[in-house]
Image 1 (cartoon, helix red, strand yellow):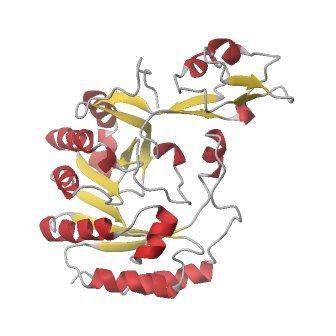
Image 2 (cartoon, helix red, strand yellow; image 1 turned 30 degrees about the horizontal axis):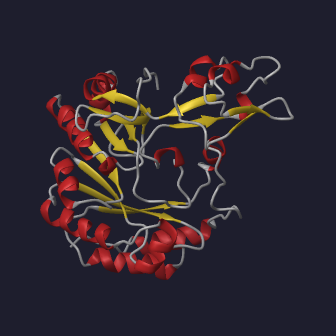
Image 3 (spheres, helix red, strand yellow; image 1 turned 45 degrees about the horizontal axis):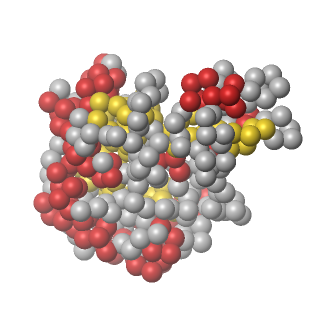
Length: 316
């Protein structure tokens, strides 16, 4: 993503500007057709399996990829650029970051010739994003695709998310949003006015299990889902459950979610997504330990069984 770093990334207008950490072109899995994904920063959940940990915090965050670093002896420009002296040399010639001193200013990003540093989160304007999205419009026309907002969770920047989808709609671009629904109903409903598709995560309908593994309860999420189906039944509402080992990968877990969905009308499709550890490298970049240490996997046969159970979910 090519953007210009703002002088003060934490000062973000609530509607015309927002904090974006990635824009992905030519996606095929987040709505109909070929999509342009705009990832907004900030998320109220703390899922241990999160594949985008750089999305969680509401502020920009510095990432460091040691594999790209050419070493202090050959370079060392980042040490000179860091006025807070948060960057130090390690014994192997690479560098270490004292996160307690780093203020995520991005000065090291600007001087690093090997792109070992990356600042996750840049201020972008609605107009700037829409211009980038419109550059893919030829693919939308041919495939029925459009713009999808992801994150993080777009509901964390509700006015900006609504403004983005509204601007896209005004240009005839199909719109979609991915959300876990942990927000004020007013924020969710305002965004959904300008959405054609809502992809809604339901990780577990069991309150205690949800709180233990996700960091928040699920009452607000499930209540918002019910309201969404009632008041926005004209939308294409896709329900997704990420299947995570030792969390929600039993037949009873999926059956319980199916029974919950079968008591609600207005949604259109239920999908299961198998666990993957694609986010592990990003945790290292952020100086964090990956929360799932034992590299769990979902057995293919087990996944087939769970998907067969998910087929019993019907929107009446």
